[in-house]
Image 1: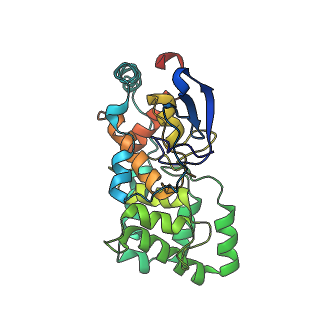
Image 2: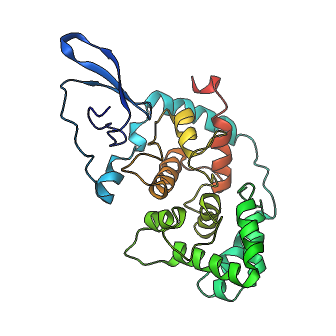
Image 3: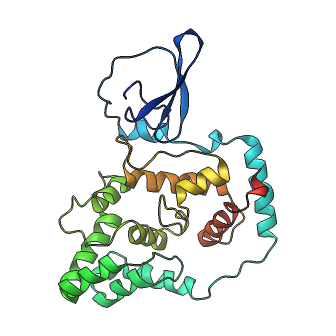
Length: 276
């Protein structure tokens, strides 16, 4: 049912009438969960394509969080930071090693096996089971799989300047680049960004999961509803980066590193009583 575009998602699909209000107005709800009052019926029309900058402007911002919710999170943060973090001593060295491997020079001179090892390591961030990647690697062999993985990482990190990082990420996610390595998808691409840009990227490797990705953390910790990844005007690549930057801004300073900040967010989402 197409009534109007959802103000949050800019999507005009799957909008349902919740109830009719006085004066002929209607309370409607989009599939993302957002509800609003629709005052006048409109003629269904195609959802206009929006520019990159327009979409980024429409994405939720830190100032959209309720001030009282921010205060509750601040209390949890103070409680969390009172405990000395227990860091894996191997993370710093591992990150440094792969920063060299993923450098423009190191990427094409490293042994192919270190790329496969990266996909299956849990040091610093856990990408989960990589059966698809491993199966493809074994079928292709070290040389071909290594080359495909190198090209994938190279495009992500050093692709054309005129293509934003968000869109390069999307190209690798949706398979529009023929050279992209099979199975080297969201968790591994995000993990590579965490390694190369450790001050920017939180070690939360998925946008949305049942266990809790960036979208779920934004909702449970800060009360923000982020766009659904299937919304037609957004792309997963953009949502991955913009949600990371949003959470990074919201979580603020005081943490030893981004792993520490991510661990706090994971912990905070389960502190239901502390967030009420």
